[in-house]
Amino acid sequence: MIKQKTQVIVNPASDQGRTRGRWREIKEALKTFIREFHYEFTEKPLQAIDLTRQAIKNGTELVIGVGGDGTLNEIANGFFEENKIINPETELAIVPSGTGCDFMRSLNLPTSLKKALQILSKAVPRRVDVGRVTYLNQEGKKEQRFFLNVADFGVGGEVVHEVNRKRLERKASSYFRTLITTMISYRPKRIKLKINDLELPENDYLIGAVANGRIFGKGMKIAPTAEIDDGLFDLILIRGMKFFEFLKNSWKIFTGSHLSHPKTSLWKACWLEAQPIQKEKVILEIDGEEVGYLPATFEIIPAQLLIKAKVQS
Image (cartoon, rainbow, N blue to C red; front, side):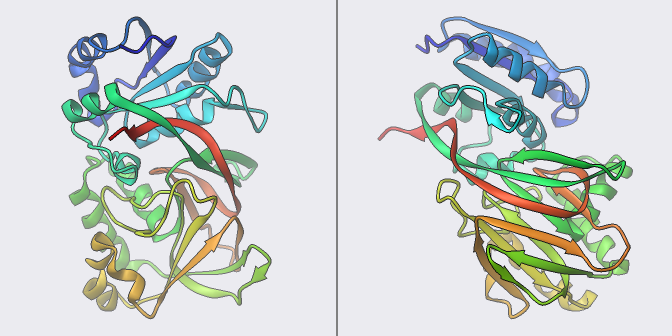
């Protein structure tokens, strides 16, 4: 039985609104292994940041997020204020109720509700790295966010933009279909990169994925060797491809075998900067949400957040 002071933050709109309908089931399941908890529903975007921040300041020892990757990202951002973690001993736990739950997969945790609740009741905390990115927001002003899983620029950002614009259901088939249709007209972006102390020659990139976790895009193994507690990003760079060349190789991203392709490179980085050469906007998405544009800088913050994600043997 968990005796920590616990706050549950629920995004009722997650999983296409299905979370609201299954909340009673989730609440009853939580009662079986948490002595007492308070819960709040989010009513607007980014509200989970403020709810989390206030809960931690009020002495909450465990924050449980009910939702998908976007909800989890907001809650993780709420652990910080003015670039500092509010209480490094506060723990984060996840109840998956979203369309993607890619970070859960990166943690090797089950994404089914029943199994995830069973794991949560037995899990002990592990300290994981957090990414920090500074970028241009939709109004062209500098903004900073933290992320747990993957930040991505290039065609991935365009795909997220199109899925949102067309209000498609956020499932793997929607993302893959949109990826293929986007690739028909997409042109790789010319980008200048600085990785740690090394400046790369400018090049045309199709995908630039700054990965703390292994999986993004509803199941694509973009960074199969990434570790969430090694103090490093896995930076996956895929140079420009013609449509049919991409079509022939696209399945490899789902298996993680794309790293062997000659147009793919893997870098280990604790800091990097991505600068577009041309004037066209290059969309940036983090943890599955479109947030703004390049230029951007990315920094890893090692061993920063305690997540209930380790099952004792």
